Each structure stands twice: as C-alpha cells, then as structure tokens.
Length: 299
Image (cartoon, rainbow, N blue to C red; front, side, top):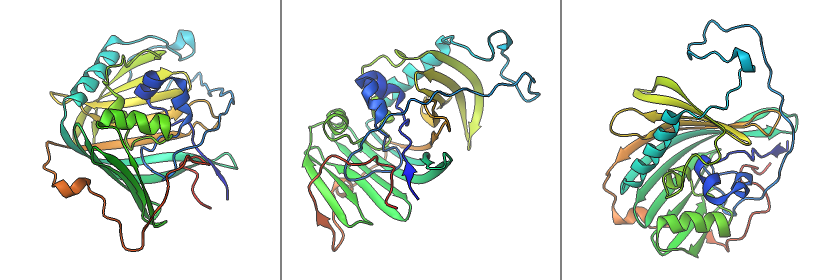
C-alpha cells in the first residue's frame, strides 16, 4: 500500500529563517532517514466545515460570531511568549529532551495514518549533538562531534559520515540547505536564533493555562500560510516548550504533526556520548540527496 508523505510538517521559526522553500521539506522531528528529503507540493483548497450551533464546551471566552469564527488578530502576549521562549532556549548550554511524536502520512485513500516515534536528543553547545530515534521496529539517528556528523539506520545496517561546520547552528543550516536533511527536533535550534519569530504570522492567540502531564503550561494558537500550529509553553521561570501541534492546511485531510517534549537541563554527558560506534555488520555508505520524502517508508 502506497503512502503519500505529509509535506506540511512546517517549522514556524525555520520558515521565517530560510523562507517558504523549507516548508516543502518534511522535518525529521520524529523520523530520520539517511538520504535527506525529496519534495512535492499540493494545491488542494481546503474548505473548513462550519456550524451555527454554539458549543456548550467552548470556554475560550471569545465571540467570533460576526466573522464566521475566523480571526486575524495578533495577540501580543502570544508573540511575546514565543520570543521569550526562543531567548531562553538559546541560554541552554546542555540539555536532554525525550520527545514523543505522531506524524500523519496521507494514504492513497485520502486517510491520515499516524507514524509514532520516540526521540532522545542530547545537546552540548556549541558543538555536540546526539539524536536516537525509535519507531517502526527501527533505531536510527544522528551524531555530531564538532568536526563531522554521522547519520545511521540500524535496521538497514548502514551509516554515513560527512565533514560538518564547527558549531551546531552551522550544522543545522548546512544539513537543511546542502543535504535536505532536517535536524531532529529542529525547531529547538531555530527558535530565538537571531530571527524575528512572528514575521509570517496571520493570527496569534492565547488560549489559557492547561496541564501537559504534570506541568502547568500556557496554550497558544498561531496561524500562517499553509499551517495552523499550537504551542504549550511551561509557566514560571523556565519557558520551555511542552507540546506542539502543527496542522497542514494545504491538504484536504489536514494531516498533523504532534510532539510532546520532556526536558532535563544541565545533564552530565560522558565524552563517548557523541562518538558513533557502528554495530557489527554495519557498512558505511556515501551520503546522497533523497529520491523520496523521509516519511515515505519502504512498502
């Protein structure tokens, strides 16, 4: 059974940093291949369903009845929170993130099917990174030691290694621009990276404080061309992202990408953490651009 990739895993900040082309690359937030990503575009017009019946569960405290439920207002509290989160993320020199992701692919029937992944990301700025991604009975990932990056796929039994820029910021841009590979959980590197984070927003709204597992987080909703996205940011002195949902509004089925983050700040990493040791039988291959989207798995 063939599957069409969800091309709309759109990074809110990366789009602003690198332009609309990045929106065509399905991000490796939850699944990493060894060959980058190919692109295809859709131009299906989505007509949202509407109802004139008010919901008794609506507690947002807003009345949009005059404009059919649509709003283009920019809530300064929402954009200020986004900027504050980005600035805080840039202050973190060592961190570990456990992330559970669900990313829709669109089947030939038009139905969405979710791919579930778990990512463990370890970062030591300015020049160390390790990401291990499990899902679909496979373990794959990426390592970076300040000189080279290595990506591997344990199920397929191979890895690739290339020279890399000397910093994480340079690595993220090099992977995206030259290899069409998105760094796992790439938004964590783009947010607050010297770019204004609200340039392409058409709407921004503060929803309210909610619980994400045991954490108290403020829920925000944003809208930009091609994507609706929601972000939950931890309240208090640590404005860390708790959860994010991105909806591709360019496709009729409106596929979604969801990620929940769990953080460890200032962990101690052994030097071997960022060294790749291939398993017995693994072979090294050349890294080449992808000939298909990263979420389009082997049939």
